[in-house]
Image (cartoon, rainbow, N blue to C red; front, side, top):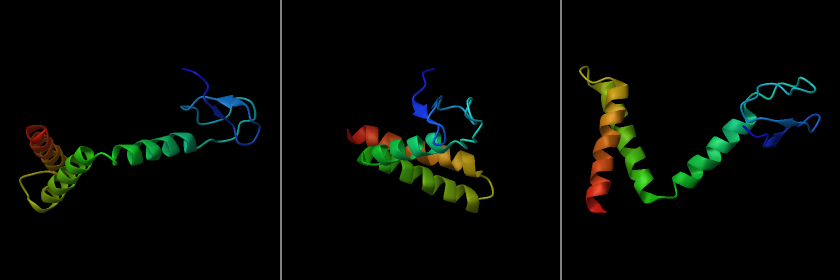
Length: 91
């Protein structure tokens, strides 16, 4: 674990996992984590293969909502797996 962020109030080094600044006690509320996750998702979605698998997961999850036999989670995994298979078969 390395301190990679700074507290917006006191500029003290904080870890990405911290919820509170260890120096001033300001609540960090995961702002750093959510921003970093959003950046990584944007970068990943630039790849056509990631978009296809995410689309398959979304379709599977929607099917899981409609079909009584399939749960949303199972539909999501099945849709992503099928889309991933198709992507791998193409490449």
